[in-house]
Length: 275
Image (cartoon, rainbow, N blue to C red; front, side, top):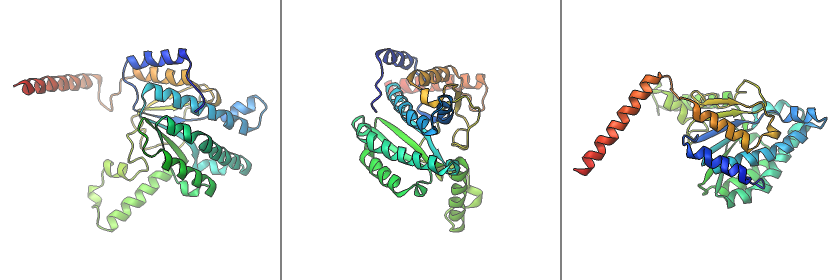
């Protein structure tokens, strides 16, 4: 994580933090590497390589803001369909990044985790990934969660298989299957749903990413291509998030009533504690 925040960026982060309402979990669709390279008459791999710097910048910004979880859409199941040379290059880049960044993640108390069908990754990637996961598993400052060989539809199919097997084995009744049952059988069962989904590159689609989990996530689309994405762009997304009213299907008046009820309950509890 060699990218370090400038003094201006640190002041901006502190200003945003002072307003509260920082997303607990941010997920990012890192789009635009290929277009960035094409604009510069460079091979696509150049965009992917430059994109690593953007990952560092995003991690630095999230740590500064106090974000608990950052999930990055690193390699989708659909990406396996790309030209073999590009896939091989991406795999080598993942290995190199793990080798170069794990020690600093560990030093900065950042835990690395993954979601996805990682068994399909090349053995060398699995080996480096396993080492990085083990080395950082006790870190607590932030979780950097990589979606590797992942897709939302794949995840839901796997969840359905697991729930069906549980029903066949009598561990659950079909009539008892609920939203909570589905959530517990996803690869993100150990994580809260993303509060904020950011997509770089200006495209307005979710590309088969966290289909279940982003049902109520706030979405921010940046026109900036991922290789150019830096701290200020993530801050822009968070500042926009802070302006949103998250209603979760309710209306504003209901949210206000709930807030008042909670405040009254807290006041009542404090009075009882003094008795």
